[in-house]
Amino acid sequence: MVTVLALVAGIAFTAQAQNAHPAAQMDHAPPPVAGGIWKAVVPARKMHGEFDNFDPMGLAAGAMIPADCSLNWVSPDTGKLYCFVSGTSLVYFLQSPGTKLRDAEATWISLRKTRR
Image 1 (cartoon, rainbow, N blue to C red):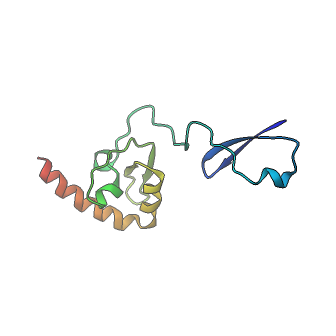
Image 2 (cartoon, rainbow, N blue to C red):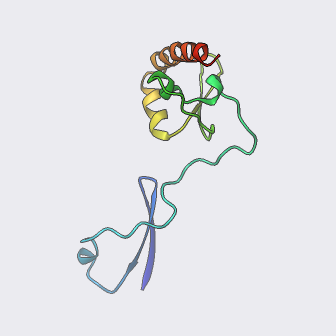
């Protein structure tokens, strides 16, 4: 019996191969391993990003979603750090960072006024 570990789209799977024909082994997907999708490590010391660590994509949509900065981006133009709550948020942000930052900044200004 052989144990196989594979990484597919960020999810780890384990399967045990018997002495069966290879085509028969491909009929079903192996069960997922406990632990779920991998994520970047939370920084050892607190990082301070723009917008008080709120996700810029959330702000652009009008919501204040706190992020832990384990997923972040530094603007090559300004050197400012932006924190994201998920990889999906970061990927969508990177499609048009200038536009998303302008939208997030406008929302941030209006939300800060209402919080006071």
